[in-house]
Amino acid sequence: MYSYKLAKERTLPVQRRGKDRLLELMTLEEVAEYLRVTKKTVYRLLERRRIPATKVGHQYRFDKTMIDDWLKQNTTGRQANILVVDDEETIGALFKETLEELGHTVTITNDSLRGFELAKERSYNLVFLDLKMPGFDGAEFFKQIREIKPDLPVTIITGYPDSDLMMKALSIGPFGVIKKPFTSQEIITVINTYLNAK
Image (tube, rainbow, N blue to C red; front, side, top):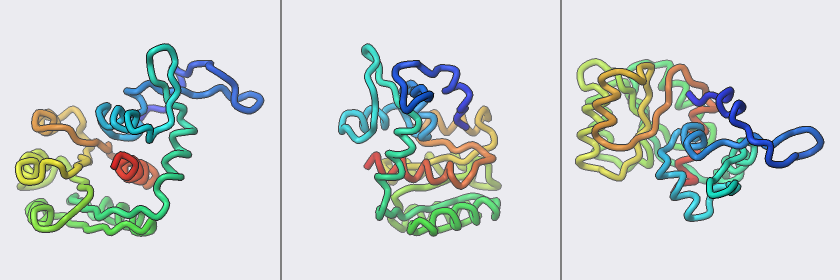
């Protein structure tokens, strides 16, 4: 989970906004973690001039407030078809409630084999995948889906970011991460980041 405290400790007093507020600038690494994407995705957004950034010397910096505003402004009317594979029913319910309210189409399954079949057969814009599931674990699911749909964006859901399964998934290729426990706002941030990166 992104550490707001970390970003605050690295705040650069570049200029004042309003009377008292200093800009709270994040590094490229911090904004990638905040948006739950890879640094490569942030670079792509920068190349396309799709993300607000400030250059300080030779480095890009990102104001958290501007990033939040940018996410809100750029997602109006844009929907995604999303698959959520998680064996915890409360997680699936949180995704469904959060995302359908925003107009997204959400398919939920608590069975990893069924989720894999759905991912193969249907067209999804994004998959949220629990890492630790009975039977067919998230790392194996990720490996097999990468073989047949290498461009399908996957965000791994985990309460075990330092586990062997996570190391196995990391060896397969890039993916987003959302760490348990998480909030509906964190789900929205991931979706909005994906929509803005397209």
